[in-house]
Amino acid sequence: MATTIRDVARAASVSIGTVSRALKNQPGLSEATRLRVVEAARQLGYDAAQLRPRIRRLTFLLHRQHNNFAVSPFFSHVLHGVEDVCRERGIVPSVLTAGATEDVVTQMRLHAPDAVAVAGFVEPETLTMLAAMQRPLVLIDLWAPGLRSVNLDNAAGAALAMRHLFAQQRKRIAFIGGSLAHFSIAQRALGYRRAFFEAGLLFDPSLEVTIDAGLDPDSGAARAMHQLLDAPGPQPDAVFAYNDAAALAALRACRSRGLRVPEDIAIIGFDDIPAAAHATPPLSTISVDKEALGRRGVELLLEDAPAELEVRLPVRLIARASTLVKTP
Image (cartoon, rainbow, N blue to C red; front, side):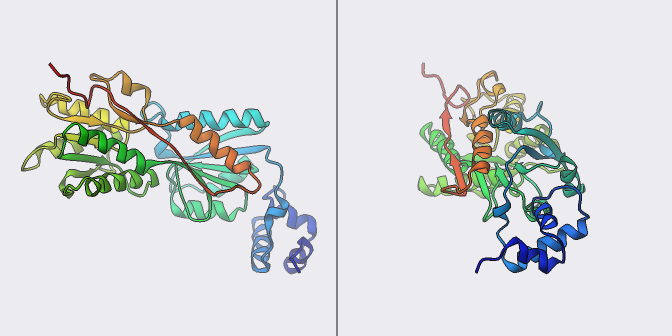
């Protein structure tokens, strides 16, 4: 016989109403009581989805390292997609930014959301705490086993970028990457390495450089590019950067050294931010529908029984002048 809410109430020595409020994470209970009820429900195997409330409020959680829309506008577009679906469904969205040292759960309880969308990188400990709150949860541009997630097809995008550079007769292709703790960056790095194997070429590990975590992304990418150019031996003839902001910084670094782009070195990014098309020369990139990423995340969150927990959205190549040498 299936465990009922009455069984949970009896095990936790509380009322049925208290169980309902605790599992819906509603206000009015002490944290100790809520945790006692949650633990009793877990031990009895009670399916809290039976109490799934109608979602009226959604909190969009973003790590502070992503909270600079002027420098990295990727997540501002994702947020637009989230807001569009919320508007259509009568859901009130709120935005919460938090860092590694902050009490995310306490801040989340102040927002009192019915559901949470986590975008980009967060520390594993934070994700564990959010999952323990037992509210509907979706990950956007992030992945964890057993949780609903929506991501770009990052590895396929990296393969598109690399095949394009190979087609331009580039062989010494460098990769400027960020922290591999970020799921999307790790997938792009994997696609970069795999592309050499699929093309029958040897992979040179010295061509893969990670941005210094202590620097801002622009300075870090520029330093990484100078590091590649100053390394002994043949210089790279192309660069694949993990995002457009890094690619644009690399492009400026190359031009400051007197290199011609793309004649001497080709450069391609990822994300197709607005600045990419207006660079000198315009930046080749992997185009992604950032608003669709946010929209699909909320739609997956709202599905009662999704056909799949992990959704991947397609990407496409945009070839511009930063990789295409003009023929006489």
